[in-house]
Length: 92
Image 1 (cartoon, rainbow, N blue to C red):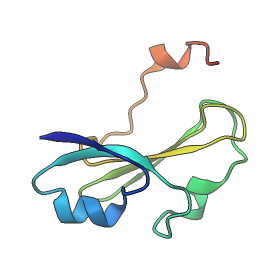
Image 2: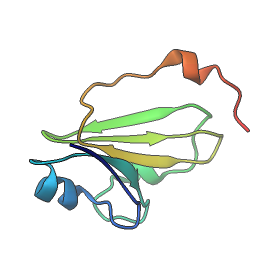
Image 3: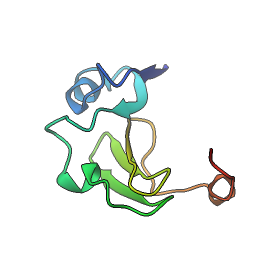
Image 4: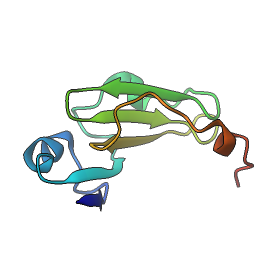
């Protein structure tokens, strides 16, 4: 079963605990201690992505705009893949 989770509740330990039975996807608060420093840095160019992989999860730190970041955690993706077609789309 696929499930999306609110950033307030979503942590890597939740993926470890529930990941065997569920496929989880969601954003992670940048204040979580389990995130590497590279994931919370704001000094990035627009559309830049940084990936990190574990056995059961993938972390992505994405910069939708210059100096803004969003951190995603997925238990359903395991490849460093970006859809280039969506990257060309204008952002508001």
